[in-house]
Image 1 (cartoon, one colour):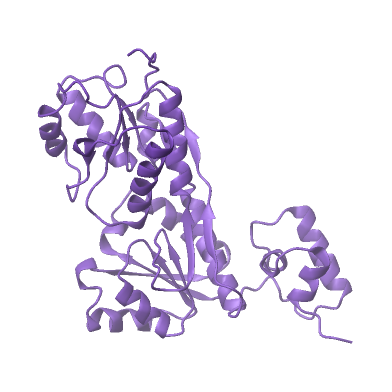
Image 2: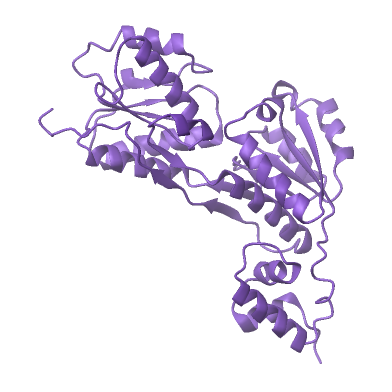
Length: 337
């Protein structure tokens, strides 16, 4: 009799090996009905690990990120909460190592992080290719979250930034806006770059003009005074955008503050949308894109466990979907306005 494996069980039920593994471990992401089918089939086939399957092979995970991410209370705190909760539920020890972004490529930074890890890394956010390559050369399994590098082949967990921008563009366009600006900053975060590229693509697809003077991208960090200065020199222009897409909600809230201080009303005078659906928005009427932040963290742990247990399976670029949250920050225009 041939040996019963995860592959043989998955082939009979026409599901992935990862799904079988999660079902037998009791991990989330599998329906109760399918979990029962997998467990019963594994038992019938005499799968030897079925009794021990609830025991996850990963015991220690190191979360690696830039120091600034740990102080973020809007986006990253929710991602980290998803990682922490998943680890706690499955008795996985989680260590956190923060690094100075300006020192990522120095030898002492690389050496300092290696002793912390046992079974694998979850790398959160922007990181240099140099450090990423060093981690890959260590042969320790790792997953990268909210970042992507063409230079490093590994497992990535991201959200569909392109789809999010499309949904914002369609919502703005449907409400009659044809002159749309974009605000970001000069930080080269992967998600920010994707969102700006998607804006350029969909402006072209919707046959709308992109005006360089209304692409506000040069500030390293978007501050109220910076935006007020930009507004003072352009708000009276006849071609000033009736709507603006902001690269994230924090930028949108800063922009709204600047507009308010200049007695410019949202959405009566200018329409604004954001991206991320941070918790602070419960006090605002900002239209935005909801990002499944805790699910990103949970998925990262799942993917790392799967990589440890199946080191030879194809690498995966996982993309989680996003949803438009319509609030009252976009004014409906007639096409004659």
